[in-house]
Every structure is written in C-alpha cells, then in structure tokens.
Picture 1 (cartoon, rainbow, N blue to C red):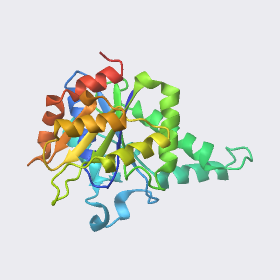
Picture 2: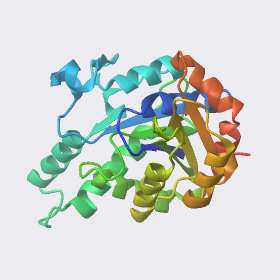
Picture 3: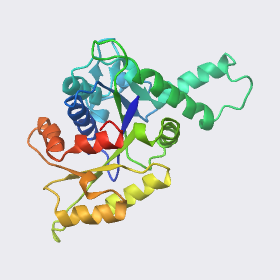
Picture 4: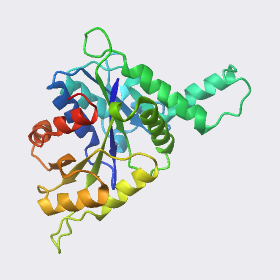
Length: 273
C-alpha cells in the first residue's frame, strides 16, 4: 500500500480537503485505485452532534456514519463509497484504547499515548486503507490521508507521531507528504510572503516529517522568485512546489494540479514511475 499524506500549516481552512480530493483525482487518472482517510483531531466521537456553524455541514455516509464534510468531497471527486471507519477522530481512538484497557488487552501495563494510542492509530489506518471502496475486489493502490487542523496543534500531536512511525515502517518509497500552506500578500507591500510557510515546514520537520511537495495557497499565481525562495528554505525542489491559487470553482483544482505535473512528482516519490 502506498500512502499520500496531506497536512496543513499557518492557518486552518486552507482547502486541504479539496487538495486531497484533487490529488486522488489526478492519481486515479493515471490508472491507480484510490481510497481515502480523514483524520479529525477533536475529541467528539463523530461529527453527528456538532453544530454546522462550528464545523460545516455533517455528511451522512451510506452506512449511516455522520462524518466531516471532506468525506463528501472524497466521494464526489473519486466516485467511491466510504464507511464511517474512513473518518478517524481522537474520540474514536481513545474509546477503542480505553475499551481494550478495561478488558485487559494491555496485560496490566501502564496505558500511554506512546505506544498505545499511536499504535491504535497506525493499526486503524493500515486496516481501513485495504478496504475496497470503489466496488472492485482487492485493496486500492494508494491511500490519501488528510490530517485535519494545522501542524503544531496540541490535539494532532499523537497523529503526527503515529504517521511518523508509519512512514518509518512502510519506507520512503511508499509514502508521500504534501504540505498545504498559505502564501499571504500584505496589501501595502504587495509582496508574496514565504516566512509563514518556512516556519510551518520547519515545525513539521522538527516533528520528524519532511514534506516532499508543497501546495501553496494564494490569491494570485505564485511568482517564480517566490517558488525559488520556498525551494531554498524548505528543501523542496522547485518542480515539487505546486500553486493552488483562488479559482471560481473547486473542480478547477484537479486541472491546476495536472497542469503543474503534480501526478508525475507524486508517482516519482512513490516509485510508481
């Protein structure tokens, strides 16, 4: 199984869900079978009891699971049928760990975030990623994982550690990390600022994950000088710096990625080309 992880930095609400869905679309266009997992670091068991004003619409799956709206994007973009297990929340993970503790699965050990919670996260990802979601038999080729929130949030720390361990266990050739970040423009200066992204990437690297591709969100297309600066300070080749600027419709995003040869960069990292 190959994994593509999509993380976000600087601010939340950058469009990681649409980016992850669009990555799935360009990989599917290359003839690969794609499944997806959304990680939400909140303590709610699912989105069913949350106010739509708090977290956007609640999407209801075929199996009755009430989940994050990003799973609706995945189903529409990738033409798949997901289950409630494709949405991992901190609440679900802690509940499963505590249930195991109550029945003695840990054999009297002290139950801790590392290794017990992180192992539960890894096992969940590895078991759900092989469940077919496109109506065909056998597991998919690639699993796109979206980590909700932003890098550095206290809530997402166990997930980042689990994903770091997953990367180590599956190997570099089976793991591609795409970091979605914001390139703001200050109205007075009019210059595209890279410093927030530099800090975000530095924080991600400090946690043991190094991005292979950068997906930069901006109002206007990125300048070449901005890409070169990002490449120099973030240790990402210029060809792997993708620009997702504002578009009138989210269905333009897969085309943006394809036109920048995002699929070639991802396939190369995953050793599929």
